[in-house]
Image (cartoon, rainbow, N blue to C red):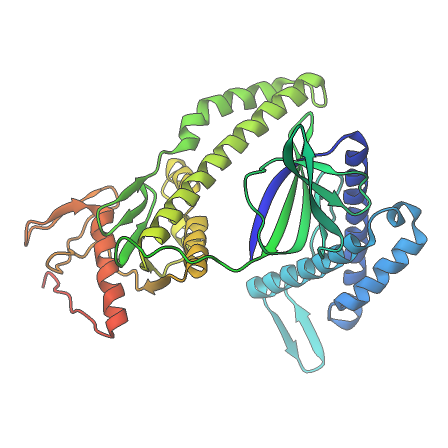
Amino acid sequence: MKTLKVRIEPNSSQRKVIDHTIDANRLVYNSLLVACKQVFSEKRELPSVFDLNRITTQIRHNSPYVKDSYSATLYETAKRAHEACKKTLGTHRKEYGEFDIDLYEFNVHGDHFPRFRPKGQFNSFTYPTARDYSVEYVRKNGKKRRMLKLGKVPGLLRCYNQDTVIEGNLKTCTVKRKDMGNHYEYYACIVIEDTPKPYPEPAKGPVGVDIGVSNIAALSDGTVFRNDHIFAKMAKRLAKLQRQLSRALFGSEHYKKLLTRLNHLYEKINNHRKNNTETISAYIVKNHDVIGMEDLSVRALRRISKNRKMTNGYNDASLGTLVRRITDKALSAGREVILVDPKDTSQLCSQCGSIVKKDLSVRVHSCPFCGFTADRDVNGAKNILRRTLAKINGMARPSRSLS
């Protein structure tokens, strides 16, 4: 499975239908949350998706406004509401707990449900099957152009990203709307079921990957991808726009223009981070057949941030996304990802196995026992590679401590 995200450019009549469908789905979503709350308060369990679909059908029959939207998208919204309630209740029970004493049931801090979505905070709907939409090709000015046909949306929608080839079976299509201030941008996320093409034979062997803030990724062969801290570079421009936005009259044309500029700047930062993530993950998977990484929680790693600059560095590195993209691409390419114990990978000398204690601010590993000197993250990546090979061979290499 892969997802192709393309920007679409609807005309005024098409935008009107898309906006109406989004708002109808929002109303159904809020109504189903009410139904979930009522059923859960009586039976202590959520209604099934089938029950929510029946309620959705009743809403369609009683509301001409909702009936004008595409019905299949409403049933996907029912699944969305069910999953949201299930996730929220599960997270709440994990954090606060629930216990029974004989016939009495106690819920600590009450039951939590998802919030209702006001206008502007519900911006997507989903076509569940390829029968509800289609990708069509037309000739314009002598060129073959890809267009998108959506259920109940009149005509064909213009698409960007004409170069990416669609190969495989079309599954779902999610239409998203993004508020840019004085205008909306529309995107279509098409899920495609395809047969992954095997990568060519890797040019290099196994590799250890150490992820971090100073270097987004450091490989055991010495390759280093540095964190360029894009947010810090844009900080002055962001601060200036935010000051101007705070002084502008809310809802005025000047306010909307400033909000548009601010949203475009944030979009530029996010695209830069995505580009780094895709470039690094593609390089690692294409060139190495066995990839060793630390078995650690990126969320827990981010919590030990010492200051705001370090936190912004974590955001720029997008470590969680990087790990996920490496894993996904490796699975698609038939590569092997091995997770190893992260303990002391930065403190151990990869040359002699001695423990060399150093603070997080020390970026160079210098071993007083064997004289080996290297970048701190590269040294950690070498230790990760050694543990990866030991895990493959079923062997453990003992390390020597200071004592």
